[in-house]
Length: 226
Image (cartoon, rainbow, N blue to C red):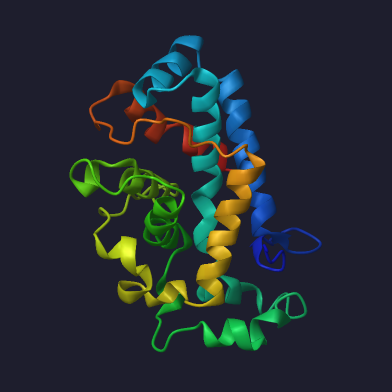
């Protein structure tokens, strides 16, 4: 079950706004951008690259965009509101959340978009995204997290095999236990809300594809910058 106490937006709001609400909102905005900004030809081209229909492609891209702030479900990010929103953040003192903070996690230095990049490959694998069929860095399983990890303008380096097994090993700031469980619950909830948009998507794409390049440089940024 999604814990709606985990916040995604706070500044300028009367109360912290749940991460899950922000993920869904972003996915909906992405759908609006798809409908009103992309030309029919662009939509068709993206669908062709993914080897699915335009309607399916729209849902898949919405899902990806919605996942951009998954990395806010980490100890370091959630602590950012402790001073200004102490009552709303009181749940962080619960045993499950405390126990999930790994020793020497360095979470204060872990940017949320980088956390998305590190945590997401394992979760996409759990949804059925193939882990084989070519070099890891050329699979959607790795490419999508890398794209989302750059939604503030700086793209992280590629995904390694360890990220599919235990992302907390090299990035302890992600948090374990309930933190990892909640990241999965949020991914699963968004996936369900959007109608489980996996379909028969092509799992290996070329960076040289014009449609893919256009998507990675424009659509996620437009959708997430609100």
